[in-house]
Image (tube, rainbow, N blue to C red; front, top):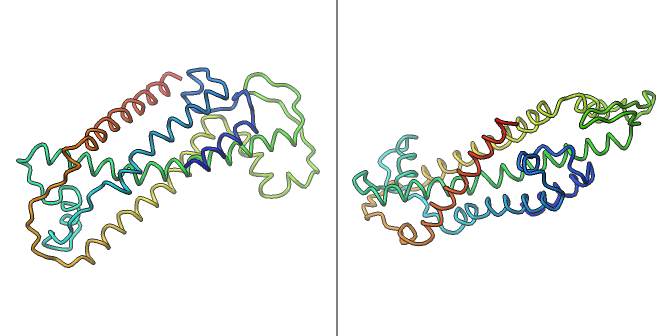
Length: 246
């Protein structure tokens, strides 16, 4: 995440040190300069780091030998609840929070890395384009340009893509970026589910009736999971509200 974050910072500075083409809602609404952009980028990277750490080192994997059959419902039940009954409210809730934090620890860093790569490619394309055209007039993000049509750059595939991309509005550019990011992130989600299913069916069906316990789920680590989800939801909702009023 650190590498793609730095790549985003470098390409953002490459396209415009003043951030006039920056589409991040936090940067736009808080009117931050480049140093503010760096701080926001670091903050959101750290926000994605906690669930990744939990996913890698603290999450208690499902005891698939508890299952009775090899169907999707049974495997999902074991993965989500791991033998916990509904009458054990606190333990049940802790397990759900644990599963959510763990899955987001897998999904969010992947989504973050892909989005940063896509945004960096967009930044480079915009910066490269403006360095190979003549800017006649510029009002805000509206730019009147001319370019040499005989230049081979505009005849190759990347040059034609740049011309198409630069004709898109900021909203259309953002839609394209989100489409690419969500498509790749969805593929990784499918991989995760397939991996868990294969792991489950490869585990022999046993008679594991040991009562589910996990020291972490009554510890400060679980409290940290609750706090992280609350903070993440807060920024997620604020982001939606800011985007709605923009």
